[in-house]
Length: 383
Image 1 (cartoon, rainbow, N blue to C red):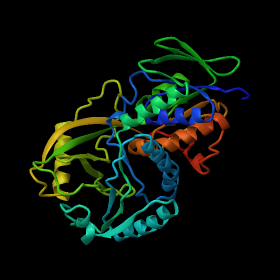
Image 2: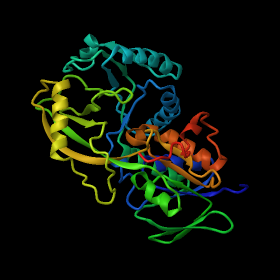
Image 3: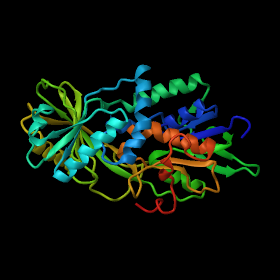
Image 4: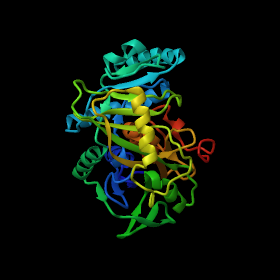
């Protein structure tokens, strides 16, 4: 296009806001729409972990693009709590993968170290290492507040004359005869050249409005706070008991001096949730399950008891990797950025980068290899 295209990004969560940011940085005119408020969906219910402790070269490639953007925002005021990230191993095979991960991370400038089972108490004195082979720890990882990040991105977008319309729901879509789209919303009609579907748990519904099929399932996950009688004399890092799908899925971390947050990355129910009507409170059965896993891994926490709980939705794909790019390559102006599951927050900068590339250049030119995220027919299958 010879003139700056007008791109509408539908969804004001982390994926949508990072997509909009990358678009305006490349000169596009951008409007962000959300049927609710900024970060009111899955983003606002996330525990906000950002980490690099992975064994897959592709996952580390993606984080090699994402982490520098977090560091940029941190310099602009985003609170990044660098408490560290410990991923646990149960087998020697997993420990061997961790050793390789240390080398791969070092190539990208990330610090990490492998700990044997007997050394884990150096990081988490309350840890019971029974059944563990060890772990990999990244001291620079930690957590952010996703809502705070989205609001900071919104402020920067408005400074660059992007338009953000909250409580503005898309009710109908029309392909214009000369190219582009007309979107009917709860406020007014909007004409644009390109649309990015970053609607999170609503992404499949939005795709259907365009006559496309998108297999992204809203998956229910629950978190709960663990309250302590007195502050720990150390900061509990993020702890994850999951390696390539193996492990309990339990993860927990420091939140406040006398409070931890815990959730299970695995899911018990395979039934999709309706994002309009799902119960956003943590169910009693889930609280009990979390409590049992916590007591097994970190017993003897001082006066540990369950606090408030809540539920959020992971938008997931069949292969548990996000969809980024056009569903139909013959319609390159309709781009999808969805399905990042439990890693949406930490991948949001690179997902936004790749989505902007597809929208403006027709390929992920700034992230070679990211074409693997394209929602091809082989990947876009029922979950």
